[in-house]
Amino acid sequence: MDWLPVALVIGLALTFAFTNGFHDASNSVATAIATRALSPRIAITMAAGLNLVGAFLGEGIARTIGENIIVPPDGTEGLILITAALLGAVAWNLITWWWGMPSSSTHALIGGLAGASLAAGSTVLWSGIWTDVVLPMFVSPLAGLVVAYLGMRVLVRVVGNHRRQGVDRDLRRAQVASAAAMALGHGLQDAAKTMGVVVLALSVTGHGGGDGVPWPVMVSAAVALAAGTYAGGWRIMRTLGRRIISPAPEPAQGMVAEASAAAVLYLAAVAHAPVSTTHTITSAILGTGLTGRSSAIRWVVIRRILLTWVLTFPAAAGLAALLCAVVLAL
Image (cartoon, rainbow, N blue to C red; front, top):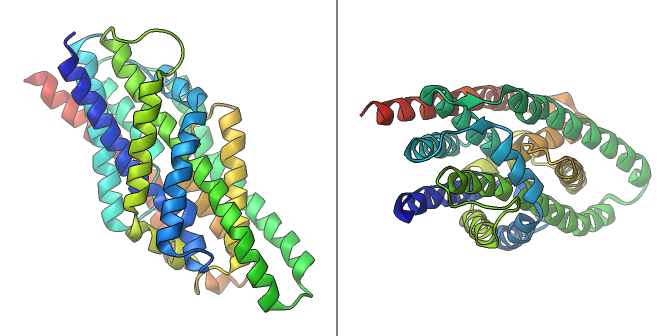
């Protein structure tokens, strides 16, 4: 197949990576900004740089996306399927960004792949969907919530008798490290998903080869994700940083939430499981909030976030299926 349509699909995949970056930039730095551990510009710059580094560590997750979700047809039909999946995922990212709701770019992409495959009549690997989407959708938020809750309890016991001002100052310093760990984990998880789709596009058009992810694909996905992160996601950042817990999270809560979420992301990466950074950090923030007054948690916002999570997979699947069906009918 000619390289032009392949290049256009790769460009669309990199566009998805860019929207992933500005949509999920808040994942790693929202609480650090809310607690004033970092200024917004320094936080975003650090997150973009570590997203870039983390992208080179996620090859195993890229293989999961490329091999365990769908079996697309070869040639032009395969490219149309992948294009529809990417457009569905990008559209849902933009819709939820406009709403200021933290949704999963991972589930949007996998939902788009599944929906477009159903419309094209190709094989969806439902066992892979169950293993790599449904189970992590429940396990990773629960793990983030529990680890953050327990971590916050332990921290309160350790520092409870120290002067608050001195403790907060030290915790802000520690939060720089935890935010950095979260940013690295985001790059590790999310850039790999774009790599997997690009490898899939190369494979269906006969341009792929070998088991690994080509270096040009890694570099392109890493740069696109980092650029999107640097562009920032201020709408969603306000939701995560200031609207889940009122008033905004304290330095202790921010540090524990970020460290807990990062630990879950790294453990998932070891298992080559593509988990949602959005679900994990949101649940971790809630976990730290549960150690304080229940009235401090804005349950209305939590319900809206949960509804967005539930809608993400079917909404992206529906958009992709519609696009794929329309194009194939032409």
